[in-house]
Image (cartoon, rainbow, N blue to C red; front, side):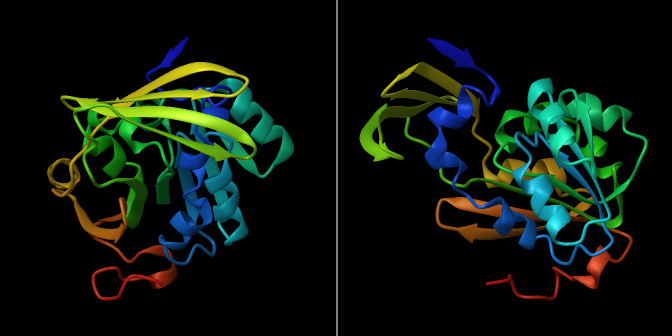
Length: 233
């Protein structure tokens, strides 16, 4: 049985196909116009959000993930992307640049609680945005299980929460059992961690929320003013 506190992608992706379904293009679109922007994609995995940012006109993208094989392949296949093979906190501590947009697609619950907020703020240009998605409903404390078929493979999964840790046990045809665990981060905690120096907008989409967090003191790239505009459709 595999137990992972953070996704290794080789095991995570086939086990959690359903949970990768939140469209990275939709997340990037929530960030507003990107023409000419510099972008940092944290915990990028196979780089789906990275590529979406490039397709929307980003001038330069840095992709960060601790799984070296994954990001090395991304760099080989897309020479316009710069990669850094390390954890998120190390990257934020050591990157020399400032960015118009910092992205995190489907991975914020693995690292935000262990990352001082000033590290994120200090990587943003004035008016720059930190955009991520996360669950907005606390999982049950009693184990909940269900079955389904995805891409021709039968899955059985169990989800529950112990304190502020969420455990996800996944079994599937042809795959060894897999246990994944990550943090439950209530919206009040997000506001407390990030709200001192960032203006926060939460877009609720069912059980998922997209957070657009803008550094005070400048105009966002593309001129998108989240304090005045309605959320995009």
